[in-house]
Amino acid sequence: MFHFLIKRAQRDSTERTQRNTVLTKKNILPVLLSLFLLFTLAFSCVSRTVINRKILAQNIQFASTTPTVLEVGDIGILSVTVEPEEHDEGVVMWKSSDINVISLNLTGSSTATYSADNPGTATITATVGTTSISIDSDPITVGISAESIEFTTPPPLTLEVDDTGALFVTVEPSNHTDGAVVWESSDISVLSLNPSGATTTYSADNPGTVTITATVGTTSISRTITVGIPAISVAIDSASKPADSVNINDTGALTATVLPADHTDGDVQWSSSNTEFVSIDEQTGMYRAVGIGTATITARIGSVSDTTEIQVLARSIPAESIKFASTTPTNLEVSDDIGVLSVTVTPSNHTDGAVVWESDNPSVLSVTSTGPTTAEYSAKSIRTVTITASVGTASITHTFNIFGVDGSIILDFKETPPNTLSPQSSGTIFLVVHPTNHSLGEPKWQALHSDIFTLGVADNGLSAEYQYRGATSGTTATTVTITLGSASISHIFRFNP
Image 1: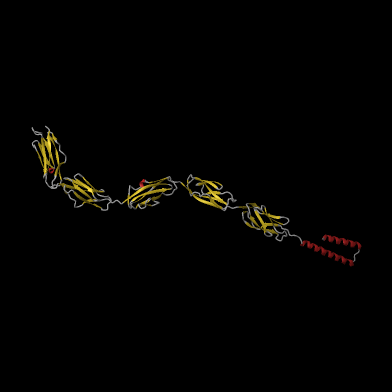
Image 2: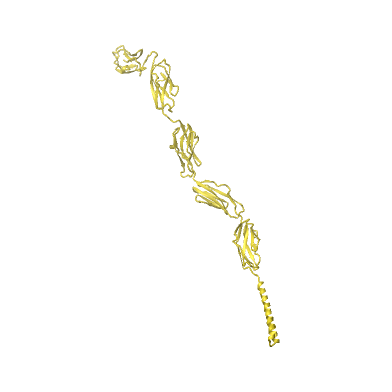
């Protein structure tokens, strides 16, 4: 327009110049006025052209970092900044590369809300202006996070070396997008793993404690497992066992040998079948006899055990001495058929039991126990008899002289002399007087045919040496007679020619 007006003014000026070769001051003034009006009109048109020019968008940026990972169900706001701010390009246009994964909703000139609807990957594009100035977000991944992970079957708390097995986990929800389960052993020298998804096999290789962890996404579960070497046998040491029995309040310590020596089953555990008889420390094996009876003691470690029995008796108190009652008789008569014997044992609380009675000639004087310290005796014939009373290692004897009713005695040969003698034969005859404590003096000896048979009495009349010189014509025997009081005994020797 402006150029058009200039050209028109130039053309009009040329025409006027041609009509008026000579200009006068009178006609110059209208020309100048026309030029001024034309210039004013042209300036007005140019001004309007500059004022109505459109401001275009030059740059667009996300106002903040866009997420790169979302979970199904997440929602949020996206915002961009457009430069210059006073642009005339209108509102920002938003686009998702996959509206099934991320959907958008315009909420302002430069903002939009998003919704993560399904697993997948999408890119968000923001565009402004007719020249399509745009910006793309980094790819955004929408997934389903694992919410929980649990062992399908509880893993064992303990294993033995060389044990093998498998572990299983269950992840919820089952359609999670966190990928495969990651298995980890805190010490593969103790427990090694061979994982395969939600399952892993294991091998217990060495003793120790290890933690097994299964992880998916940000969720994990762990279990601590102890691997050990089991005890295969335990035996209570014979040297530590008590003798056949113990006494009340006796104490001792039992020990046991466990194989193999490098087992990892810990310490032997001790127990008593009856703590009223024998109590025992569970850890140390120290026992105490607390009551009369028998208890079975068990040593247990892992899955193996051994037992022994301990019998508890009253504490042994030995008898130290034994004494016949002061009223015990020394002399008896056959007519005193039955009597009572009594002894006193020291100490009285001994534990050796009842007194044991014994006669060295029961056919003459029998003795029968009637109580712990008493007995009955019966004198059956004239003799000297010794009674022994014993308890434990203590004992005492008492000799009884048994007389006839009238105080009579009897004589007896200690050994029966020979019945036949040859010339020049000799020997000794031994005499026994019953009872031995008689008061009748010495026995008297007599022999027939003293010319060929001689006696030499000795030992207070209790023995005599004899000699046979040889028989005279018509002598065939001799008789030896011994008398003491009213008692007598004789023996016939027959002579060989």
